[in-house]
Image (cartoon, rainbow, N blue to C red; front, side, top):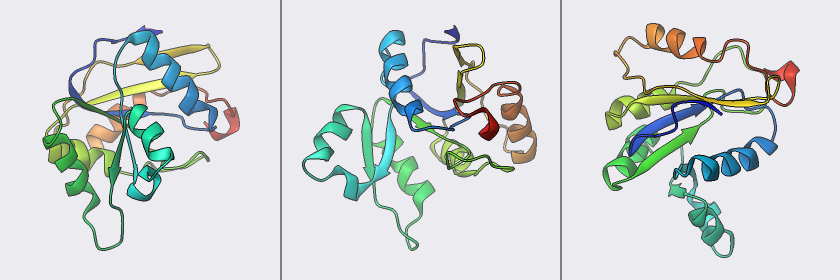
Length: 162
């Protein structure tokens, strides 16, 4: 494992490339190695009994999703209501190859006023990389371009999706 492993108490962690459902279990094992709590969000329906207990134990935070809800604001409020929240998200928004990242992670970091940390599961080199915290500038094009540089040359489990 290379890079920054002493994470901040509050941050957005972008994990890429996300190419396989195995990524979740590897990430859970990795967070045990670095001894850091890392959270994720899921629609509130997932947090009902019996799976809700498991998801909360794994660091999950329920959010209400829907076309009428302001998800960025709701998730930023989760940051405000927790002393410790390291929210891991996939900027691709899927396990398939994408040409353009979703930008929700960016706006969540901006609204919550927290830095972004990049993390990768590089199957090609069999390593996990973690970046230093990046404090966004407000210039989304510049910031996204910078953040994408961290992932250059990294291959996910299914390399054609990387």
